Image 1 (cartoon, rainbow, N blue to C red):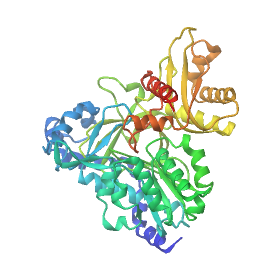
Image 2 (cartoon, one colour):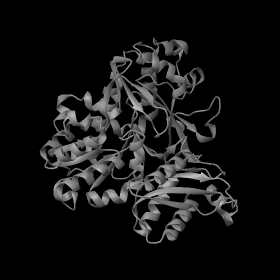
Image 3 (cartoon, one colour):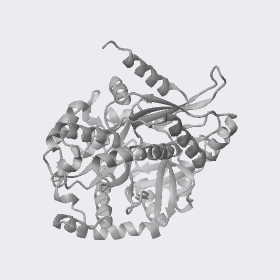
Image 4 (cartoon, rainbow, N blue to C red):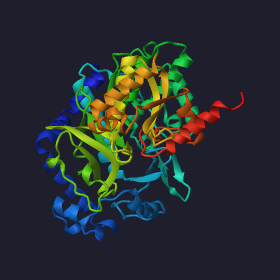
Length: 508
């Protein structure tokens, strides 16, 4: 281990012991977080409305305060953005993270308090590297420069006293000087608005630096790496950055990008996952496995909604002590930025309860259940990864939508796939995909039985660059904008197909 990395790890020994306590004292830690949040929120407008001052237990909290989506909080957020304060949290909010989730959804503006930055996002960043160094004691990650890919930040048009942008940009803009010493590129480039110019300048700036790690969303990091290779004329990233060590990723599932990124960065590159959203920093990869450790002391109180409760007027939730492994839950959070019993939209599955390890299984809105198949993103990602591995193919992006009964009474799933390297035989690829989905999901298997309800999936191969061009056409380039994976309707699929058709028939 390099001297600077060894020094950092020694500094973090006490913190690592605290993280070890998560396994034993999870319920106590979460009770403390709830008490802290209620005390801070008691004098806000929201806290007075729901009687935070009189709440003494998690049971009272769940009885008195409703589970809400963004739509219920939006009127409060709009007032905050106009300059009011102490509505949701006990400080004046100056930053709002713009989160669109999917490309077509109306933008959400998530309040980011100073306490959330310090106690959640920055603490998560420190813990990330502490856990990484603990698992990789020979690391030299701090002996060189580290690229962080993020978005942009702008004053709000209706109130220039506040700023809105990607949460990564808010974090970058407020980093202390010591945290800037090992980060590249400089802020003037990192916070640029125009994405294509930013990619070019990032590649030019980092080309001759000693890059040790990258933090970012896989799809956009791939574009940066390809730009670096194109500018350098080299065939391998290792020829440019010989000491490159780890890619820290999050935002979307890594599975569809694993093969092409390993090819770009080398088989010996480490990949480290985080769950860092606009709403908070929730999970960090634990050890050299792929599961995430739930971070319990970041000023976030967690509740877990069994999926059979989702959509009910008064859904039942459970605390950390009642979760079971292997069961899918919708995540409900209360945070030190004033989100109270907020249904964030992600689903998780616990793989361990000592310590609390989990996987992100999908989104509450991103699934296909048109025919009772209950297909989730996790199923799709794993099946696609298996089909790619067995056929030596690679993909850039994909989305899936149902085809309802057509002229041949043929209901099926239509997969729009942008291949980086196509399979030699698409029928073999489709068969492997279908068999893996049946193996992973018994409901899908039942609907596929003898082709009675669902026919074989249909793969539509799109020209390389289609999804990027579609996002650009919508003005949605950047890390916070994601291609929707699964949809219960055909809105995105038809839009993408129509866009691809127009591009294909444009005059040369």
